[in-house]
Image 1 (cartoon, one colour):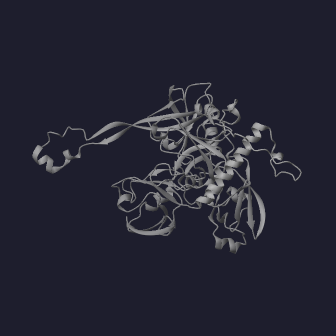
Image 2 (image 1 turned 180 degrees about the vertical axis):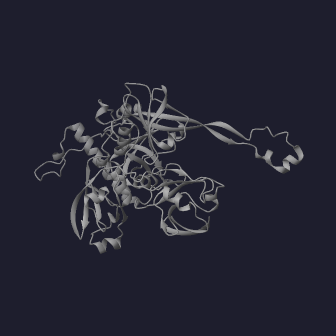
Image 3 (image 1 turned 135 degrees about the vertical axis):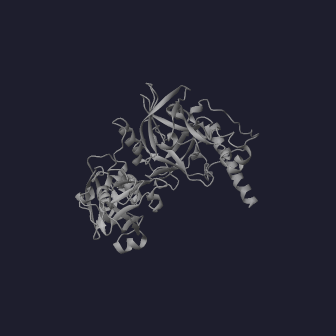
Amino acid sequence: MSGWVSGWRGALAVLVVLAVGGAVGGVSVAQLGPPQPDAEPPAPLASPEPVRKVVPADTSVIEYSYAPLMKRVAPAVVNIYTTKMVQAGGNRIFDDPFFRQFFGDRFSDEPQEKRKQQNSLGSGVIVRANGVVVTNHHVIKGADEIFVVLNDRREFKARIIADDARLDLAVLKIESAGLPFLPLRDSDAIEVGDVAFAIGNPFGIGQTVTQGIVSAVGRASRSAAGDYEFFIQTDAAINPGNSGGALVGLDGKLFGINTSIFSPTGSYAGIGFAIPANMVKRIVEASQTGGKVLRPWFGATGQEITSDLAESLGLDRPGGVLVNAVYPGGPADKAGLQVGDVVTELEGRRVDDPASMVSLLATHSVGGKVQIRVVRDRGMMTLAVPLVAAPEVPKRDETVLPKGHLFAGAKVANMSPALADELQLDIMGKGVIVLAIERGGSAHRSGLRPGDVIVSINNKPVRSVAELNAGWTGYRGMMEVKIKRGDQIVTGTFRQ
């Protein structure tokens, strides 16, 4: 092996000498062949000199750097720090009977809980010259005060103008103008292998740039903070404090907002995720029109296509969504979608599973239509689905059941497509849902849980809060109540 390496290096040295000789003596590559039969062999060099290393006169010819790009985009990435007051645990020993046996009540006035200030750090991106900043929802969640520190060290107090926990995005506003900002890239055009730079404030040490490539697109993350798990994956180092920072490309445009990492230790492990710029665009637009993000509602549910299902349906590969329920009168129903159809594409983008279909739909605004490709009876067709928000029919009528009610202390509401979408429940669900339970109340003692849907009382369907209240009025004796808990129906017997 060592002899092979030596031979290889020797051959390389010969090539280097030949190349240098060509550069110095003016011999062209065509002249560096075997001597012709009628040509005289070249005369050997009398006293060969060592190869000299010369600095090129114009270093720009051979020096490549991302520095000009970073000088242009880095000023648009900001540091964000928040403050909030939290309860610090008091000394509960003063409530202990054993302690009071010896010391009495002399410490009864000792405050049991103290408030202290808690700080957190993150990153953000300026996306408008007038001071519109995008960051992650989890960076500013629960903050009493939010401060934005620019690249030039100027500091501004910020206010929230849009916040969406499901997207894990928030939009802030600072009072300034003429700021550097990053334009948004069409994230649907980003491909695996594109060069990417992550810019942020990892560990609070100050602005840092890391470089890598786009490792995957349309990736679902098990560690994401938001519910729309459709991310750009990158191997550019992302660490705690990078959240809310920028993922940019070679064109200086924003690929997405860095949001999470996949790591067994909590630190960089080569897998990071960014929320695509098209989703960022949605919330920025919403922030300019009141701050509420209206999401298109598909009006159908489905399941992932396994290998066995693909074979039975005549598909050449697993992928897509097998429709198993269509909401009557919903957008999918109006488009002509049927139970048993397989949705394979949405606006030309491949649909791999239900999560990817929901996330692809979430990048569109309410209004207009989207084209979906559907396999039906082993044939292909295209349907146009209207982009509408989920309706709140019936009205939710949130009510806390009063004292004396069997489920007193339960906060309930009418199920509707809008509420089901908000709570990520089955859109086909009907009845009265339990939103919260007051501890110690009769609802809590009965075993009722948040998320339960009260379906019927004594086999009489409960379709509204009003019917739930009417079901108890004037009734005495044993009552059978059916509750949907997850995918199961639970039956309970109660005495009124």
